[in-house]
Length: 333
Ligand SMILES: NC(=O)c1ccc[n+]([C@@H]2O[C@H](COP(=O)([O-])OP(=O)(O)OC[C@H]3O[C@@H](n4cnc5c(N)ncnc54)[C@H](OP(=O)(O)O)[C@@H]3O)[C@@H](O)[C@H]2O)c1
Image (cartoon, rainbow, N blue to C red; front, side, top):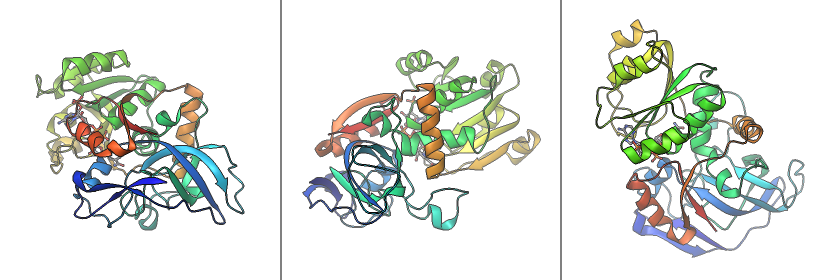
């Protein structure tokens, strides 16, 4: 089988397409034919060497495919089942602990940029019947993060206002989940083309953050003059406008740092508004199974941008860096 490995020093020019033997599953394991992956900002940091990885590490946290063979003692899956991998190999259930979040797939352990993987069965969930493998492969990192921000760390309710920033993977899932729970969405974006797409996807209001850099008061006015109830924060840096845009007792989910700047805001402003703040990384296998159930029931379809093939993985990351995408970039076989 073919797979992509990182040669050191890690860079997009050092992603190697190599031939490796397929390993048959041992007790408790599955052999899975991987049919699709999606790209995440975390993967980009690994393949570019910004986060360290081992020589020969297989990148990509997200993958979906079907079971080819099950090892002894596997009850939950059978050959032919469609499955989706989990981001954390060691976080099955319960709250985050040091052990559960210590290893991230595609960084500390091998990821899914491979034609086949042989892994413990408890590192997969069943794929929703309503989704293709490419759609399912967008879920383990970006979707689960948005899900946890809005339904676990806080509880989005009908009539709430959710503020999402930009049109990347996490933010588009946050928009879709917010709508699923009956909330209205205010989206920030950089261009009129993306604004039109975000309106089509259901955003009630879209603000161009380049044309309106002081958008905090506008978001507040557009959310019944009260402010946003939930913010899924993927940008970081100066959050003065964000805190200004928020409702008293609103929830700020710190998720990402696209600006690569440390978060800054006025303690007085946040305390006065009684802002609730959570910092989260993805979620557990149980969170993933619950999200998949909800996605299947609601017939929610992930928003896919361009498709690339596995040997063109470096080109896919170069495209991601242009930030022209909306939703998820996928790798198909
Ligand atoms: N904590 C976690 O568990 C977790 C999980 C997943 C991702 N993350 C983090 O969350 C962040 C987003 O990840 P992603 O996969 O969604 O990234 P992505 O798909 O690469 O998102 C990129 C998009 O973000 C928007 N953007 C960039 N700078 C912006 C700014 N200053 N203001 C508003 N929007 C901006 C742009 O959209 P527009 O052109 O529309 O503005 C851009 O196309 C990353 O920092 C990632 O590491 C964290």
